[in-house]
Length: 175
Image (tube, rainbow, N blue to C red; front, top):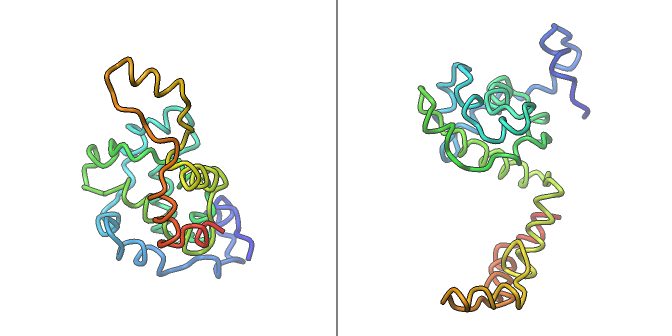
């Protein structure tokens, strides 16, 4: 089902009230770190302190939480913005209500994955991690620098990660 733009819903166009999931906020709140989300009064402190919002003004943790509380499940889970949270916890440290914003974002990403919604950039990163055990490939140049700095060399691939991906069925979850 296509979702109606938020502006139309706010303006009072109720033709798509079925797109609102009235239990969505409680589903999110029932997960780890989600309970405090119900305390949010939209002060904007989370967005004001967010380093991602500083780079991309369209990113707004406050807006995402408000949409969760209003029941816009499809719009939230399909939003590329839930994937942008850097997990720096600045929002959480500054929130006057103790909302665990970074944990809510993680919960939303997990819920999206459970419904088969995964951002393409996340899929690409997961594939790199599956293949090499990290986001970037270790080259001989990297290990030469580490040796000069007195650090041990890094293995080019990490087989343990492949085993972990298989056991946790990561490939199936990412599609």
